[in-house]
Length: 197
Image (tube, rainbow, N blue to C red; front, side, top):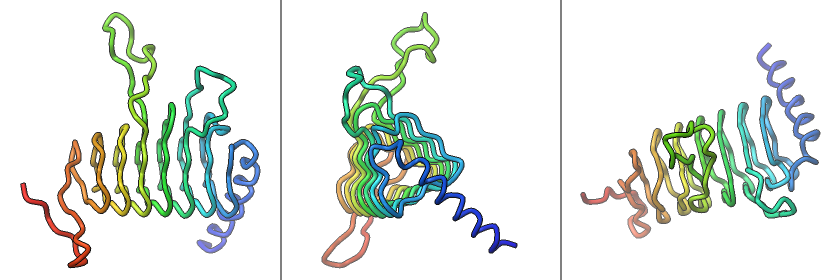
């Protein structure tokens, strides 16, 4: 029964991905969107080949002030895996590089919700752009990670439940809220080394 269910799910997701393909700026060959999937602003999203997106993902690119803009606001490079319940919101630019591993329940945004006024409900104050997001090749974001307007280098590890609000250099392991560097990779010794407090 499990084998039948898995086969059904694969076929269903392939058909679903094919039907969605023409909504995106790019949705390359061998990439898969798993149902259920929600997207707003697909025409500003480019997904390269062999990207796998698990169920309940929500991608949102907010409308530009220039409605004729064709800029890519969210790009996901080849070989990347995005876990369940991913929530990615781009106002201007989020770039996820090759072979990135993104765990379940991860939130990534290049913006913040405004809270300037106390005489207006916060839900009506909209969002503002803060800074571009970049996630380097081969990086791993653990479960429940939040990345807000930060650049993360290549081959980094972000521990589960971490909040990333500052840039992270290449080959670093970070954890915490806010996340801080706890280990760096020593290429000579070929091992992770704990940083000194």
